[in-house]
Length: 350
Image (cartoon, rainbow, N blue to C red; front, side, top):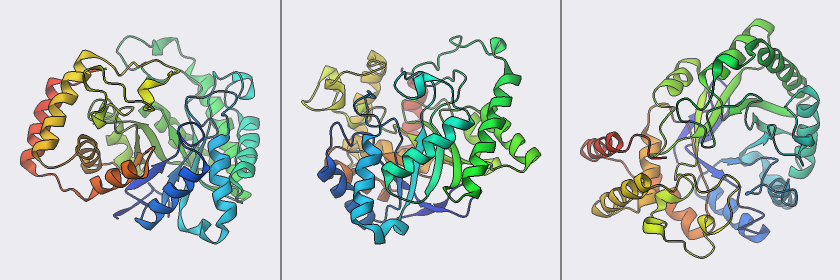
């Protein structure tokens, strides 16, 4: 398993990060235990979670995934040093989490303490802001014209970001977190945090995790260029575009128990005619090269310059095994050229 530096930090992470958002809904404690142990045995040393999980987010499932991971840690205390543990503070908008209010210093302090309790650990390796207080072009808000940036009070947001950094600095000094990162943010968000960190001697973001896949490449090249030159690790989430790049939803198929057969908080916004057409072609291309559609998508993601570690999730051990195996594939220049043509044909299918 290839290992990369986590941005400007001294932490090294595997090129595969084990995602956990289904633990507590589609997967139970036993499933999670098996996935953690399987991933560690395969050289994965990076696990990502969030206080908001499991998904879809509900008051009943809030914190469940962290608690499941915490149970494993409690039963395997001697193995805590084998992996990098990342979690996230939820942003605004969910009324059952801090009344849906913005992230501020007080929220950071409480959220870290609560996560540490649920995770049954003394420290969090990477603490991330799940989404910014301002509206960002994520979660189906990425189309041009959906956001009016001229109406944003940038100075007020910058003051709030400074407040957050001070709280993160306190947590870092107390040994509760090692590093901090962003999620679902933009080049402006990265640059402001970097500027404030430098001006005030506060923690700098070492990573950002955003949605990125063959069907959703809006961060490439603009945000990824920023990451490479500023030493901010880029961590793609949903590299299979909500599971559609597995090929299992082609032509409206809805396998029993699969994510798209369940209610979705934001709806099935990735389910479009263009997505279906693109995935059909990718599925044939994968079959022609003796790969699954998911493996082709994950192998492509890993070879993008600037990608540090790709967050993968699975509901079965077989899926996890197949997905991890994707990172052993070396895509030829010829195959990448074909995929480039496909990307140009479907540049923004959802």
